[in-house]
Length: 128
Image 1: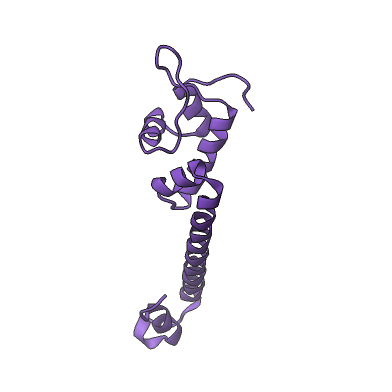
Image 2: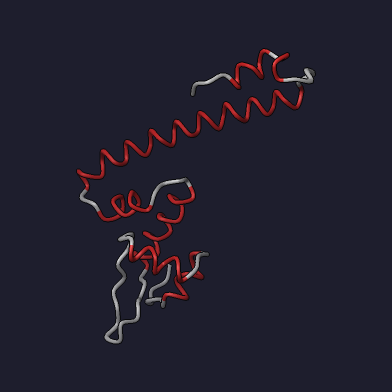
């Protein structure tokens, strides 16, 4: 990992995001990098690790407010938040698995119309 402090552009490049995104995340409270006497942001290894976690959490669909609380909140306060997010991800995973199974079925389905196929109708039925 880097031992020197990175400028915002270097940090953005390291993370594969834009400098604008890092500025936005600062406004949203995801991270507050230290600044030089002239006001330039600097990112150390710990900040880069936190931002890497933020990128991955956002890619998983987690809202920025939640990411900020996860990274900056008190440990006891985060436990409930973590459990909620884990449960939401597990529900999303189950929906994705059901959809993938449906799509696998559609590849093999010989019915020309959804209403003629019991499996397609089951997937189309209201519910989780």
